[in-house]
Length: 143
Image (cartoon, rainbow, N blue to C red; front, top):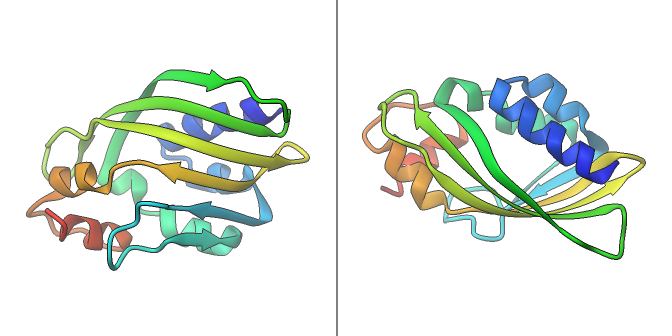
């Protein structure tokens, strides 16, 4: 169930289905960013904040997730995954190619905690010079 929730997470994000993506989380679910740059949230908690944070993602990026690899754990509710994205920043046409490591805790088949290890500098470079709204504005300013 935990790995399926993770696969659905990738499917919904790549399809731009943010409402469905949010429903993968528990009511108190949290998305954490250990490498958050200054001005970027370190965490987003609860379905309302998750939706607000991700609602513009499909307007800024077109992505396909690839190379998914799960690492075995002793806890069936825990997922550790490595994967990549190939994509484009829609405002600039620049590539958005990223590598990720994710640690995901689930409860009753829903994501309760998602720790997202990714490089915000890759997103900043792909958005450099573009006018974008929301959290991605602060990412763009890193470039």
